[in-house]
Image (cartoon, rainbow, N blue to C red; front, side):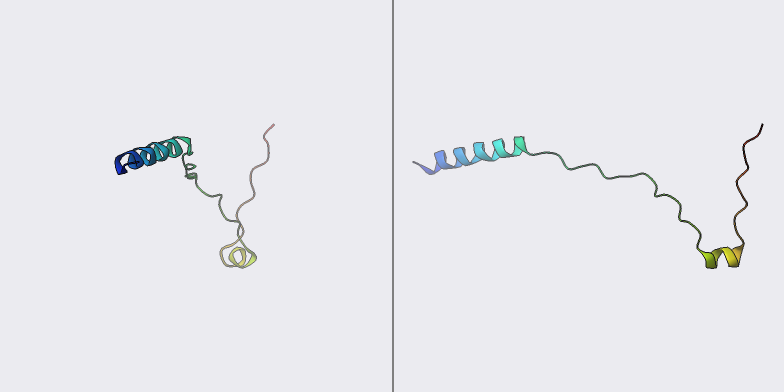
Length: 56
C-alpha cells in the first residue's frame, strides 16, 4: 500500500477513537462547607451564640 492510504486509514482510525472517547467530568465549583471551630479557637474568641430555637 502506498503511504497516502496508510495515512488515510490511520486518520480514520484516529477519528473513530476520538468519537468514542468521553468528555472529562466538570469540576465541582461549589463552595466547601465551613470549618468547625476547634477548642482553642472557641477559648480565644468565645463560642458562637447558640442557634435560635423554633418559634411557636
